[in-house]
Image 1 (cartoon, helix red, strand yellow):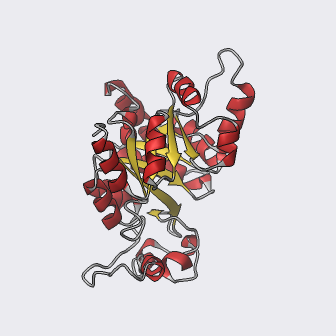
Image 2 (cartoon, helix red, strand yellow):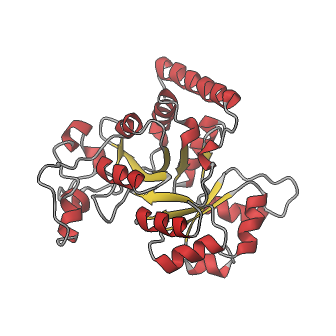
Length: 293
């Protein structure tokens, strides 16, 4: 049950989101070219600890158009940028993110797992990697386009997330995705579809079942599909004609996670709108060589 104060904040957030859409030439400016977009998966995540400010900075410097990140809520209900619910793989501390506060997380080493798994990469002694809050990311990169994956299945923090997006005027710079259908469904309802979202698995199933019905309208703005999936191949969701058909419907098509040069070229050739990659520099160099940057 929301307090009256939280209810008031929510109403104000919706008003701000609606006003921003009125004054924006394109409420989905997140998708503006150059195309295909380079979407840096957790930043430049093969060179620096993933989901850290340093990895995002490097990705942007390497030519990424969009940074992709994952979020969970802490014990004190702060949206925090990290991939796993349990912190052992990333920090070496066996605890769930929902059981610690943001201030406690500050003492954890966000580079522990990365350098353990990559002993050939020399760690700078001058940098202490930490897990950032989403608010810190907004402050650090105020004009950056950001692909946010909500990992947390709990819908209770969505109003705070929307308020945070609104407070930093990031409505047009955000694409939100979640594998938890109830989460993305609730997010769309709360924002009245004013913020771009990508299809969940349930969205795709509904589209495949009901898409032939006249006037059927998708609730999402983009597909983010696993490039190497046999299911994607089976249903032809990696073919140029399928992509063109979806683009004519006003939908974007992104593929993840592509690091191989040959596969990057193939993704470009079939007309993808975005390439989600751990190697943004490799994608940028390829696009530059073929005149797309």
